[in-house]
Image 1 (cartoon, rainbow, N blue to C red):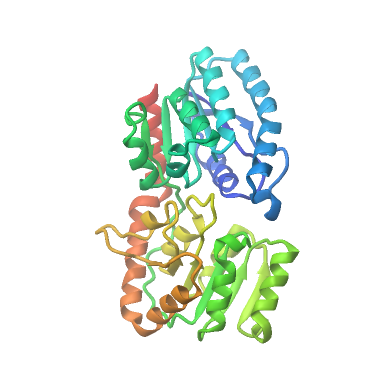
Image 2: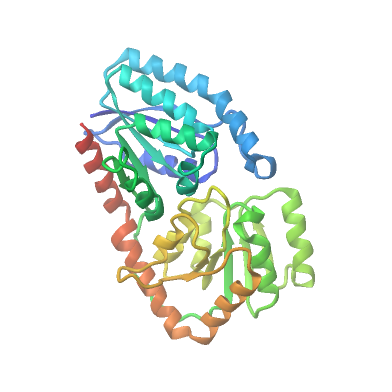
Length: 362
């Protein structure tokens, strides 16, 4: 089976992280890939890069290059499938053009949606909604990360038979380690965007008896704001570590009790840091954004993490206090979290799903 992968081969965002792992670990003799880089022309770095106009400009700039490269690949050889990732918005125009080009060359197409506001976008009467509906019509399969997006698309007559729920995955190499925790150490691991709930978390940790470690890249302005908010607790109970490699960040998780990502980031999708924390039986505090609610619901339909109200320092404080008060119950939730990851998000399980969908398409 010959597959063209239209993925971002550079960058540090969620899609790029998925791509780095996928391109290294998935291809085999039965699935031979040719890759086309769909990285934006201008790298994202927070601030302006979170705006719609920036995303539109970057996407349009890259679109013509991508179409030119894809056409060149299709002319050279025969392919069975084109698999493209997408973060929606104005990128749906690129997706539409890519799918039409694949139809011209008789290549099946997969739209792998890597963002969490599909429900809002497809129901929109504006340009984004129109582009998304038009582009989805052209694809043979649509992969989404969360049940809310899945259920929305299943309710649309012309899309319901080609939508599939395909979560992210991690390597689960360790056995469950149900060590009792004191819930005194909290870590934030991710890009330092205010919309990731960073400021609310810093506020909450100033008001509770915990240590907070902040890990991830951020602009000088955001880092300065965090330092100002931390006040006298900076470098005493609130620490800023900057960017760490994924391996270093996961290693750091072994030393904490809680991984907190109270995100309301508009394009949040499926934060890998959450399932990495779950695989280590760490408590997760987050918001019911995109796939997060799915992730923090155990195999019996009960919570296996703490879901809090977005933009609420009080809600984060209450979640931390609950863990410290009811340690045994919190530990049991962490064990359920491990079971959820091992059953649903283990790389082997998710890759088998990918293979079955490729086979079904051809």
